Image 1 (cartoon, one colour):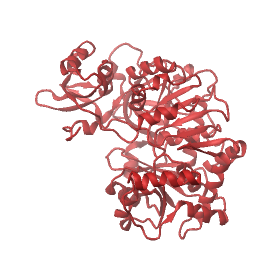
Image 2 (image 1 turned 30 degrees about the horizontal axis):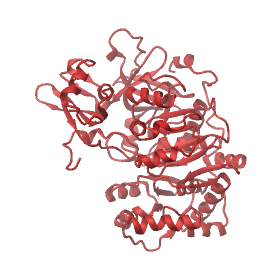
Image 3 (image 1 turned 60 degrees about the vertical axis):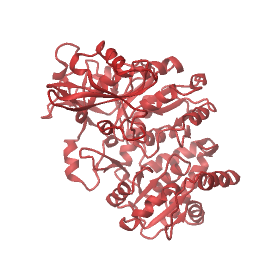
Image 4 (image 1 turned 120 degrees about the horizontal axis):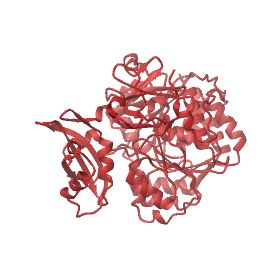
Length: 564
């Protein structure tokens, strides 16, 4: 049993344990939520709002439609391939209410990536935005998919707005490549058919798989983490308990720019919906001007994001003039929040970014800092009912660091045990055995715990740079470089070096067009010891990023592509 020293430093009102069995399933939670908040707004997108009653009705109709399809019984996998639109929560909740499993798919996948995920998951049906149907068409014959439900961007909007938006997307902007899939259903027709059909609520057990959530894991080949209803419900309880101290039921407005197909956004959205909150779905957060305009329409209280998104907002025209009086929390995850970004966010909004930590295999929440706590470079304290331990390569537990001595002796792989930890990888016992040990999930993230029970992630184990035998953590160097006023954003990786084995390379996007390599190096020399100093400084117009804005370090090692 791990000594949970962090409990002594819990914020007032936060319990040591939660009940992961308060609800039997996600549909059970959703049913009780909609009964309480039926008249309240649930989701807003593209100028239109669905109430909880409408979300309940539409998801019921979609569940009935799925149950009426040949071969679609309990436990079948249904993929969703779409950005943040009203259709997403309707389809997602409908799938779960039908007793089936959701397979979230990145809509930017190439045909090869899509084919792998559909074949590996055994998905029998897919809900897909027409913009991406051409990709599906290329691989469909080689997948087990039998039922295709297509949707257009404006499908759940009022009539005139639906027609106008769909015309603009399809005809004016030509954003829908030509496609043809025989036998496919249109979502609106599917909902109408489901509305006329009987619906039998599925008997969903806590250990049934709710989501096959795909992640790179240890090999880089996407694997499906089996997240059960109990896993997700536990994390909803854990994260909800942590942030709920000042929340009021039925009154919070939550801005959701991260895609719902990502586990951070997905669980956060379900957690806030439990409170009867209004979820404002942002379809394209990369259109930063439109995003800022949307923020200006709301007295929002919560926003979730990653470091690059917060940095982008801070550098967007007009953001500093928004009304932040209703803001209660900004939750940062997905990647480390840099000090320069955290400090500036606090100055502009008057509120800190609450840095949290998690991963797909833990549904995802593991740790978070207390609300309103200043930035300290840590991922905070473990959530209730969560054990976290730092282990060496032999799985021996390492002691807390009290600030004295060699920090390296207290640094190891962060391991997690709790009700939110996945069941395992789908049809992959070998990969499951690599990351699971006696109920513990070995995250692959390297860090340490201090004497107060706060955990700090130094870096991913695979990203650590070894210079002449000395370990260099990219996060530390990135944090220093990002502190230069002429730097907009940056990323750090290791590159081969004939004398030192590896050397530090930093890729910088300029905020000041006159910024030079020498200026970056001089800034680093004042704050970093010699072996941590960048050997190469490369300037680019943009950094390669994942769909949620996480910098893709593996692509930083390569030479910039033409046009970047």
